[in-house]
Amino acid sequence: MTSQAAADPAARTGGDRRIIVMMGAPGAGKGTQAERLAEELDLPHVSTGELFRAMLKSDSPLARKLRRYVESGGLVPDDIVVSMVEDRLRQEDAARGVILDGFPRTLAQAEALDKMLQRAGTAVCAVPYIEVPGELLLERLSGRRICTLDDQHVYHVHAMPAQAEGICDIDGAELYQRVDDSAETVQDRLDKQLPPMFEVIDYYAGHDVLFSVRGDQPPEEVTAELLRLIASRSAA
Ligand SMILES: [Zn+2]
Image 1: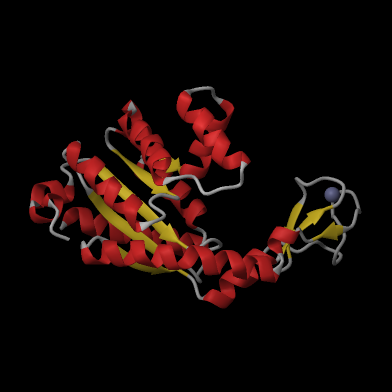
Image 2: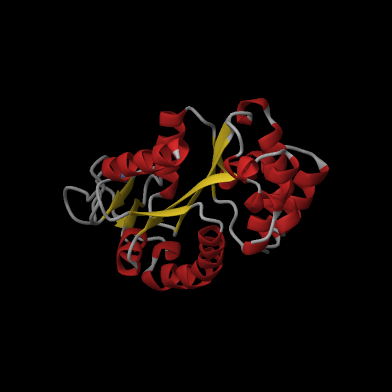
């Protein structure tokens, strides 16, 4: 909390560069909202999931290191994630700012991001947190059903049901639930991911950049509220 960035109001707002960090549990709609904000605010959407996927296809010392962790099923260490994001923030299209999605995931990553931005003379300006009740997350995440013939045919028992229950609209094949989407697996994943996320949220609340938006309203309304809150922060 006593970082230079927090003490220096110019660094706090980061000049004209807008670094926005999206927060939200899996199933909160964070990725979708990040995409919409990127479009509305004309900033690149930087998703660490996509950075990982792109890097795994490339060949560099960092990519080889990353591949070793992913192949062994281990957690990717903070220093790899941080260098990847740092490289991305140096690219020209990020000069005006970015919408970060999937980073920082831990308190250590949040602190590393602040240091990295401080070196570049800027700081995180807004951290929208899309808040969704736990039961609803579970319902959203465990409702997915996939076609046994083609895994691109994806349904959701509430959000996008098939016309006939359990049957693919396109080819009439049976639908199934992936083990990854079962209630137990989903709950397990939430139990692991939520505590570090709350630490990051507390960190940003302490830096006065966090605001919450209810994620259990229609996606267009979530976007509108996010844009309103981000605009009011920029005007302040
Ligand atoms: Zn199908």
